[in-house]
Image 1 (cartoon, helix red, strand yellow):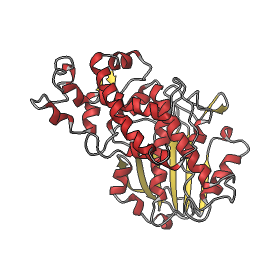
Image 2 (image 1 turned 180 degrees about the vertical axis):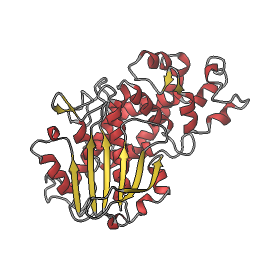
Image 3 (image 1 turned 135 degrees about the vertical axis):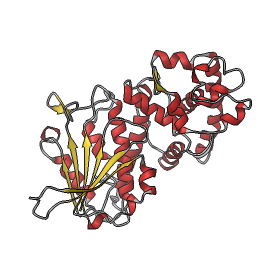
Image 4 (image 1 turned 135 degrees about the horizontal axis):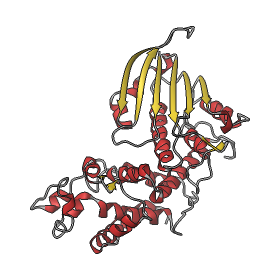
Length: 368
């Protein structure tokens, strides 16, 4: 059996990737017969359905097809990278291990992995080509018996990166076991994790200011998924920053293309902006009249504080997913600045920046 994952660079709420299973004749002369097809909403959906428990080691091939991002919509490469990281995370936790994996970078009529004969780089401040960024998402996979990357020839004419990536996936032992004695090996797992953490922070900074439809929707996704249960409750996003800060004491700051501020300073400011955009924050006493445009998606109540204690990602998407508010605009855009600089929202933003500062102090308390 062949199991094929298809990952699109476009963002759609509750649509992560499609999966197809098929049977191919041993001599490959018979057209494959599709057995089943699934649409997975996100990583949690895949884990709940048990995709990490599938017998991958008994499958003839695990195939991952990745569509090229459109350079005119730079948020697509961020979307693609995050989707690939999630898929790699699921496969890293596959109970049976991996036998034969093939990763294909596919061009389409709308987008290609190359531009003017060179590797495409959608984000100007990020000098790595889109293909290198996306392939790096799979660098933690290990113990694969056979790994094959298929990319347009212009991307890696000497085949060095591809050969190295294939070799990395076939290293024996789990991720974290390959450690150079002096920590300076070409594929030392500590270096790979450091690069991964830097990339997480760098793309998060870039996403603040990228323009385009996909970037708008990804900023909405970042705000709407900040918490998973209740306002101020569990936050995978915050836990990832906390882990990075506590693990890598000497981790260099990624470049901030707009402000000379620390990553934690930007995270604190971003938290305040998120709280100012929270749909239910607009329905506190005194806010209903000025934000009546949202009354169709957020119910009016005589107890606004009860409303503001609830966290509902679908409500975010219902509020900011239509007309001019299709997502959260770039932080450097006029609509965003007009919203955040309104006296009401500025007050909310500053208040919750101060609240979040105490949490950051807790993360740093052991060493600072």
